[in-house]
Length: 468
Ligand SMILES: [Fe+2]
Ligand SMILES: [Fe+2]
Image (tube, rainbow, N blue to C red; front, side, top):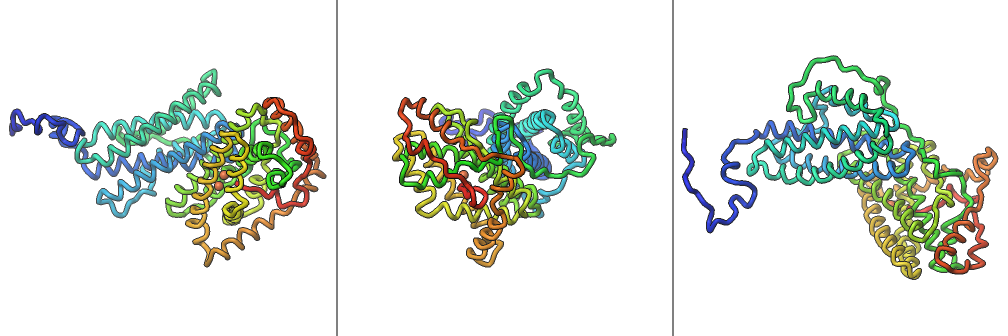
C-alpha cells in the first residue's frame, strides 16, 4: 500500500483545496459520474413531481394559506429541478433521460400523494420532503468533496429550501391533523419508497406488489377553484375597482384600498395559471419553470393585498374576493385561450395607465407600505410581460396575432352579470361602504362623502375587466 506524502502542508498553512475539505477527505475516492447522475436524476424526479403536484393543487385547494404556500413551494421545486437538469447535462450525460421514471414504485409514491384528499395531501407532501431531504444529505455525504463540487454546491442550496418547506409542512400538518390520523397513510407511502429503494435508490429495491389506494383511477386535474369559508359571495361583481381607481374624483389614499382589493383578488391568477400548466403537457422545461415563477408572483401579489388591508385596520373578508375570472376561464376556455387572455390583460398593464399609474397613486397616498407593494408589483409585471413574449407569443406568427387571439378568447367570456343574479348566485351587493368606513375608523379620519357613495358596478363589462 502506498504511503501518502508525510507532513504535507499548504503554503503558510492557508486552508487547503480552496477551503472545501481536508486532504484526508479529498484522498478518498468518491462516487462515479454514473452513480452521481443516477442519484441526481432521482432527486430531480422528486422535485419535478412535487412541482407538478403542488401546482395542480393551487386551483382546488380551498384554504388560502395553503393555496399560496403551494404556489411558493412549487416555484422552489421548479428552481431546484432546473439547477439539477443543468448539472446533469454537464456530466457527460447525453441524452439526458431526465424525463424517465426512475422506478415504478417511485412513480406510484407521487401519484398517490397527487390523488390524496385534504389533510392526507399535506401529510403526503410532508413525508416526501423528509425523504427528499435524506436523499440530498446522503448525496452530499457520499460524493467526492472536491471532484463533484458543482453538485454539492447546488444541493446545499436545495437543502436550505427543502428544510424551509419541511418546517412549513410539519407545522401545517400538526395544525390540520391534531389526532395524527394520517400516520398510517404516511406509513403506506413510505412502503412504496421502500419498494423503490428510497428516493435516491440507495437501498435495495424489492419486487413486492404495488397496491394503489387513492390513485387507482387515472388522475384528473380539477379545474374548478375552491376557497375557504372566509371567501363569500363569490360571483359578486358589485364594486368596479378599476372605475374608482381611474376616476379623478377620489383621493390617492382611498384609491389604495381599491388597489389592495385588486391585489388580494389576484388569488384568481394562480388558480387560473395552474390550470394552464396542468393541462399543457409536453412543453420544454423552461416553460414550466418560468410560468411557475409567475404563479408564485401572483400568489405573492395577492398576499401583498392581504397584508395591506391588515396594516390599514381593514377586515378584508368584508370585501368580495370573487372567483368569477378563474372559474370561468378554467371551465370555459382552452389552456391556450387562458394564456391568451392573461397575456392580453398583462400587455395592457404596461402603458401609462397600468402599473406605473398604480405606483404613482401609491406614492401620492403617503402610505409607505402601499408604495413598497406597488413598486414590486410593477417590477414583477414587467417580468411577466417578458415571460408572455417568450412562451405565449412565440406560438404565433406575430405579436399582433397573439394579441388578437387573446382578445378574441377574452370576448368569449361575455358578462354573466345578469345570469348569476337570475340564478340566485349573488345579489351583487355593494360591499364598498362597509369596508371604506372601517378603514376610515382605523385611520381616525372622516369618510369622503363622494367616496362613500361610490356604487359603480361591473354590469355590462367583460367578466370584471381587471388587471393582474
Ligand atoms: Fe402578472
Ligand atoms: Fe400580479
